[in-house]
Image (tube, rainbow, N blue to C red; front, side, top):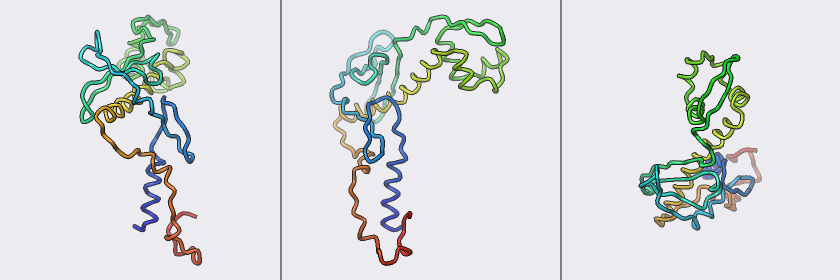
Length: 200
């Protein structure tokens, strides 16, 4: 593989990494880069209640809605999250084919995750189990669940970066390639573009 192809491959890898979710972000060379500068000012406290033995992290974006707990170190860790603004025991009344059903929020969340048992129980077909059907049927409850699921992915990244910072692990940011000012002139022969590897 030529040098120019290797460089292009590295740049494409950096561009292809998904950078969605909940931390604040900035755009660098058209690439969205998450801002994790708050990691250094986060606090870690001992978990209580159901999270006794876990470590709770504080000071991340949306900490007013979600909680993050972890155990372990940078080599091996587990992450738990909680949406403490939602009452999981609250009863939800919903209808299917005109029939009234009552479930707790927690049971509805289980339904969203795995529809197999509920589909058989309520006689639903796969045609009905679409995002549109869930949104129309459960409204805000389904939206809250979607937001929570998105946050659980972000929570894992937050814990990873916090543990690396706490343990003094220095690594090259995977987005740093976006800031490289590459001088590729030595690989180009402007007199004959037909002999140059690349995209035109």
